[in-house]
Image 1 (cartoon, helix red, strand yellow):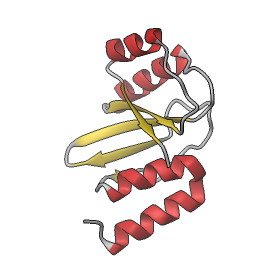
Image 2 (cartoon, one colour):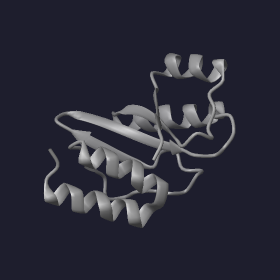
Image 3 (cartoon, one colour):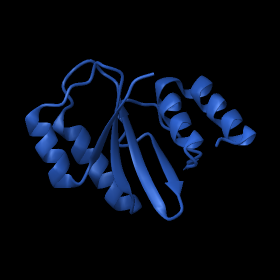
Image 4 (cartoon, one colour):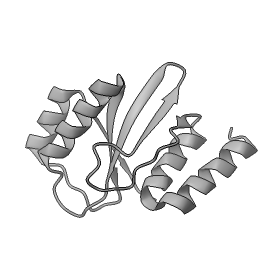
Length: 118
């Protein structure tokens, strides 16, 4: 169940940060606390940090309509290691594609991959 405060914060995130904010809003309504410094730059190593009861997710939102490059995984994994969190790559929409090579690399680096369509 979502509290009124969580719903308000989720709506604010979605309107302020676009697609990255929509992903952050979905984690906020799931009970996660979202970091204050959200980075919407596509070249950033990660976009935001979601934390809940000792679990810390370092989240990168990828929304380009192309194959996901290996460097995105490498950057995310290194940032998560520095921040002592679990790396999570969110593919936003139907455009981003994963090749077999990228899937293998994600498993190797311990990067979880989720697709979110809104």
